[in-house]
Length: 142
Image (cartoon, rainbow, N blue to C red; front, side, top):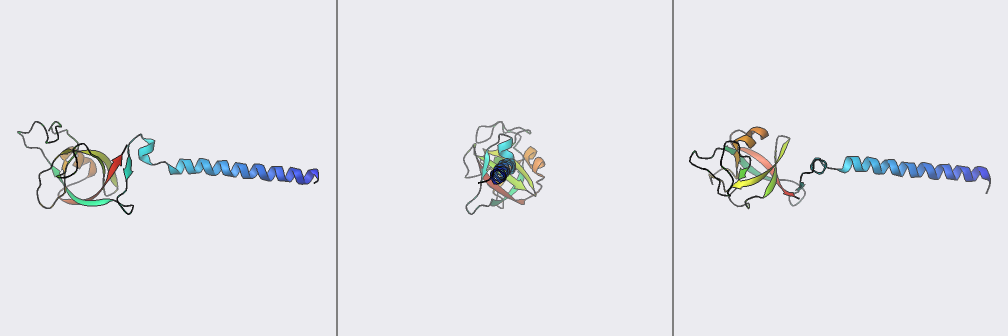
């Protein structure tokens, strides 16, 4: 093997190594989700890889209520959702028209027909939810 051929092989090996390093850096930058970057729980896709769907509407606690059925304070600043079956404290992501928020079940809900989720007013404002609207949701995993 001549010295010129050996130098060419060294240069090609170095170029290949550099390409692998650049590819790994780009993959790590593109691969992290927003929740991982912010230290939030990951969202868990529904079976089949998508989101669950349901109807939601804004909800205001009755004036006489001091705490929710899950034991959270029932104030005008309480963020969360009411749901008849999900366990109290379950963390979920809600998605509406491109806005995604992490929240938790804070109440059992009103049980009113035509909706699955009762969304507290502050959370409804953050989502842009008004009236009864279809939303998408996923469980959050810590």
